[in-house]
Image 1 (cartoon, one colour):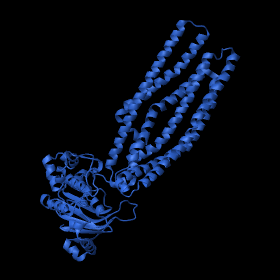
Image 2 (tube, rainbow, N blue to C red):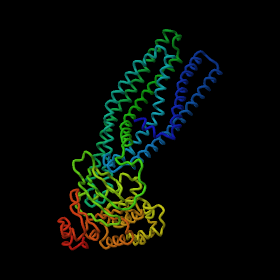
Image 3 (cartoon, rainbow, N blue to C red):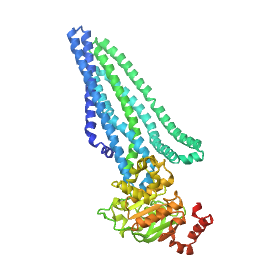
Image 4 (cartoon, rainbow, N blue to C red):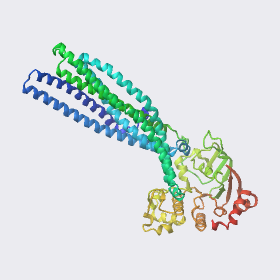
Length: 581
């Protein structure tokens, strides 16, 4: 796990190495200062001259400045290394997520990915900074301080032998109780993020049903659950301060008591006042080092849970891969499904698609209708390899989709979803997702084709109109038409409209379909719709039911022999036809 994470240090290796080097120098100077202080005190007690005082005083000032300078440098480089490491780690995670298939996203969940990219990376960043600075400083300070105290205090150093195990045992008990709490709390962060994400995306629904109070209570419950775990953890960790103070004051009392006895008994020959002063300083350094180590243990405990969650994403392999020698050209828009079965996961009990045999010639217009959960969207997701078929073969241009380069295949297939997304930026910037090199004239022509130019021209800034995140400042129908235009700019071999004209009126829908016939006759067009009028002119219509093709044929053929199609057609016409929908 550590080896995997360290790959993200990369160009910040120099800063990550310099920080502990400067910390080492800082610790050495800090440990030398008490020794010189002891000598100065001993010289003062022996009645030394001013020149001796100045000599030791200047040496102490130089040591203090050096220690301060090295401490500043170590802090500076540790900040550079840790923030750079976090930047790279977030980038590595984000790049990994971009490679995921829909199956991978379904497995981990969007909310969990967000918390791993934010909260978990921050925890690991703080831990990394502590490791390259404090985790180096504390053990070194402990070793140097104990060594120096043995040299100065001799028998008094045995006090640490009793104090240190007592402190370490207390810290160990605290860590043992705190670790499970920190491990569980991050899973609850996922639930909290999920609640926020769900609420923000469905804000219009929440307000229309006046459910603000319910959503607030649900969020508060999730937030309060996290608060309880953190309160329990922090309450346990709060004992570290009094435990530390107990050990500090106990060591000071014991050192003072035994040192006084040794000084009196030996007449100052075994231990003098300067040595006593340095011993007290070293005792503080030893115990403060242990306290810092306890802080490191706490942070590492928190970050270990976060690190495991991060590495879980980094180790996750996409269920969809490029072949070794991919085909880089899609010949045409023909589509073939040969005995295709599909399940969303190997553990799923229900088969989403079963026994699909379908052959579509390039340039055909194919309509698909069916109830919710009938497998319409699942079927078209196999064409662009958003999922792979469990059994059977899906071919595009006469070649198995698994033989194509993923980017080549997906550039040849344009999909417009019912809930397609627009991104923050101008209309022009959103449209150029389809073709970054498209000219303004081409944008206008395509938008006229998608029946979008008229409303774009009505905006004051026209194609430079700013689109808010998610396209919240345009209507549903306008958003769908912009998404259709964006897909057409890809000049795809296959164009899939997944209920993507549901928010436009029937007249506009008819105009869009009519322009498809004249402008892109060679493109295979697949139209998923709820309205019969949207598909009745198609060359082939599929009726989906329960993950199978219940019937296929032209409008007239299905109207004559398919019960589901008849039921949908007559129910819509009894309601007054499509115009009244």
